[in-house]
Length: 233
Length: 233
Image (tube, rainbow over all chains, first blue to last red; front, side, top):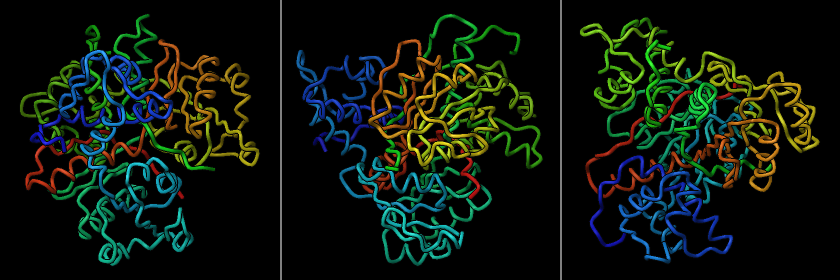
């Protein structure tokens, strides 16, 4: 907390904060301790004015000439994103994608702790993935009683996604990230986000299709998001 | 093409178009042929005004009382997104995430055809994943000569991401999607997008952290994107 009352932060800014954070961390690792809005803007492929606007919403204004203190800013962004606490995550569906997420170093680095894994395939149940035993999905309510679960990630096939979401909601999970290609329904007080890895390709095909028609790359998209660690193979 | 000259479409709209499309497809499959902006808005968790604004940018205005023709709108969005052609995609890094992408039905359904797979692990090279032989990354230029590759997806560990990106650029690839947790540099005329699966969790933790401090769920985020098919296991 900066001491100031919390401002309303637009979602577009919320989505850029982790991007700034990732860049700041890389800069800090390479020995850069202060960073200008211009450098941050170039690496994030947004305008410097947008960077300054975004960071001012956190109460961070930088120092004229010197720029922003990288370590302080990382800390400040982390607090805004609620990364100053541990978030226990349950993943339902332990296929390739579920495994990639369970093993992602990016999750752990952000205080997202994979606390439970569920699958209905008897060949997968009982397996230990990244130190966590895969349980049958039917045990979700029982596990949730013993282990606090803040967030649920659905990486199951589409036909069972709604059933899994229902079980998560019943188990008290209030934030669900759905990778299954199915529109699901949850109560209004449950956060629900859908992720589609093909959407990024679609955004690129939009721009590439246009760039092959005109010579200008006008409107090239900004970085949306960064940081999943592919699992160590 | 609608016949009208192409309007400048804001990136936020571009990112919502695949969401509308996915919802329209589900509605169409369930027998709904026309849809109001209100229904589309509720399912996409945005305002009806925003839906109407977005679709008007495509030259689609719906019919008062009847709403939008779902099939026509799907077609129109697809053309805008450049999905009226096949996009050959190369994936470098055949770990869990690379496999999940290679096998994703969502990719194929959107005309993204996985045309080449690359990995440096001798235990993985030669393997056939979803009908495509994994080649050593060093063969990227040779493969690109024989097979047109429009887009590159990097799912390698971070340390080799820049090298892979360089090889992709040299092979003529002009759109790169980077999942590796590393900021990479490409020429200005190359589209570059970063994806981080943990960013969605960070956006959720932002809202969940706030909702535990206040009782209101004000500012609950919209659907960002939907549709990856988890691989059939």
